[in-house]
Each structure stands twice: as C-alpha cells, then as structure tokens.
Image (cartoon, rainbow, N blue to C red; front, side, top):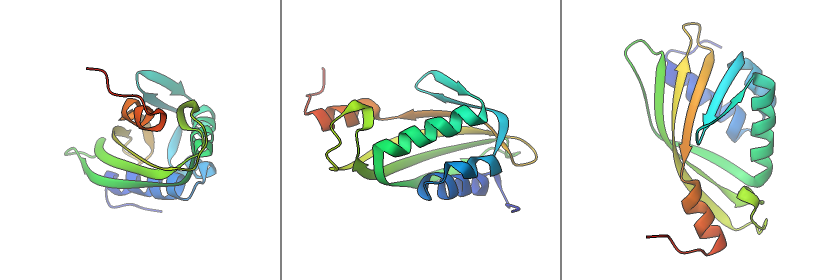
Amino acid sequence: MAYASSVEIVEAFWEEVWNARAPEKIDDFVVEDFVITNAGKSIEGRENFKAWVRAFLDTVNDLRLEAVETFQNHDGSRVASRWVVHGKNNGIMGTEPDQQPISFTGTAVWEVRSDGKLVHNWVERASWELFQRLTGQSAAA
C-alpha cells in the first residue's frame, strides 16, 4: 500500500502491528536488518524484533497504542511521536498478571528509508513510573 507521508507509514505500522496484535505484519513495514533501541538496548534484525513484539504483547492484554502527536522532518527520513499505550496488566515488567488497567506514555523516533521501509526505531517509555504504580512503590526523591 502506498502512503502519502512517513507519518502515515508509522501510524499504519502501529495500527496493523501493535493494535491488531499482528507481529507477522512487521514484514510489510521494516527492513531485514531493522534495529529497535529501547531504553539504550538494541534489538537487531527483523526476526528478533518480531519475537520482542510478541513477548511484549503477551504482557499487555487489550493493548491499544494511541498516537498523541506525530510529525516528520522535511524529507520524511525521520518521524517523531508522542504516544500512550493502554491495556490490562498481564505480567508487564515481571509484575503479577492481575489484569488491572494500565497506561503509560512514550516517545519514538523512527528512521524511514526513501522507499518507505522502517530502518531504526529509538523508543523511550515511562516504564519506571508504570512499575511503581503496579507494585505500589513510592517515587524516589
């Protein structure tokens, strides 16, 4: 499918992979040597990325990724976004899978190749804050 912008590619990826819970659709969007860097750790290769997505989806039931704001640079080679994930805790971050409603925010920067394929994704999310909420720990000063 042709997309009018890199923003549309990224938002289609979220819809067709994350919100549809369909890691196999990753093949339609990313290059073979795709890299995701999450919290400073890189996962390299499309197959490893698919395994990472499957494992993450297993920990959040009814996951819904909501794009809050998404924009691209002048040539579409970079896309940046703020987003919120909603769902039910099914053991995220090793917590008890109690199915309580969860949500957390994050940001992502994507490298988009000129043919529209996704090359690299850098992600930061509010994991520590979510962990504190799920475990009842108070914030450190």
